Image (cartoon, rainbow, N blue to C red; front, side, top):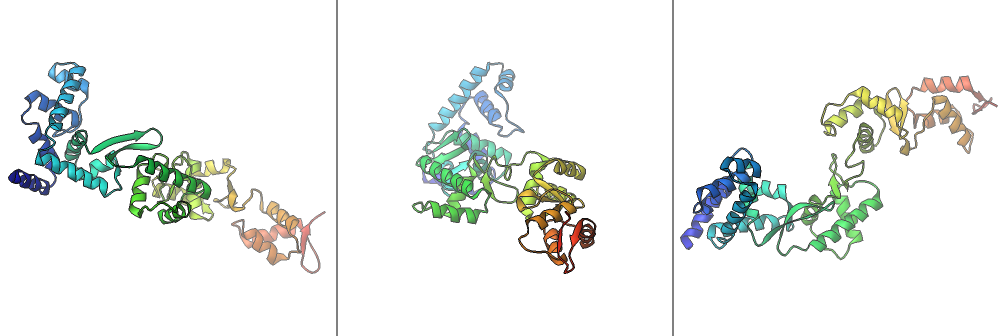
Length: 353
């Protein structure tokens, strides 16, 4: 037994071929057809996984018979769960999960264990279906298909996830992880989660997602999953916090991979012109209405400033207020002041009556 255990440990230390070689070893006493079917179905030692229909045609059997063979192989391998090589595989998978808060999305776990090797990943997927201490779980629209340790508290995960959603809704914006953690701790003082555990909890959620700028938010929100050009432009501008030229917006959309295809500046320009959430504040420069910018010509802006002011305004006052909401030359403001507004002897401007 000790010799077998040492062999198993050496196999693990051997690196990239551990899972696939172990699978081949554990099914080596089964009929040749059963071995070929299981390896083909999971894509081990092959370029891709084969469908039940493809395997059935190859071996001249029905899809249902293929399913039966796969079930039989899984059962046979589970019966070997006390073998050192199987125990080592199981412990390696459990260790990966423990290091990630007890839960990991399927793709992530397979990638970690298989070291991003497609052949190894295929064998990992097979073994995960044979383990007693690890199980797969998925909750529609709530939890991605993930693997958890047997003693994982799914209710605690739900509580944490729902609290994070509450925090994000209260903040009304995506948050960097450290800020999110701080806000979570204020709301849930009785929870004692490490930074690492919380981030692993977030990674498996269907409702919470990290955006292109590394901030966590509600997955379906436009600031996390923007759908059209307008929403992508909005996200870019929201992150910049200042007015941008439509060409700069286009560059940032591509820079942060918000579009699969290259973005065209004119498309962005056309979409922004139509949207009431954006304001043209200069030549090709746009700002967000929510920042206090309003549509209209420079003349319109000056008129509103003068009407709303609670005190008399001179040229310097008007200039500073207009330039705070419009990216135009000072001379443009002065020309509009002189052409459309009244000026008193002491330099105070007012709307012409």
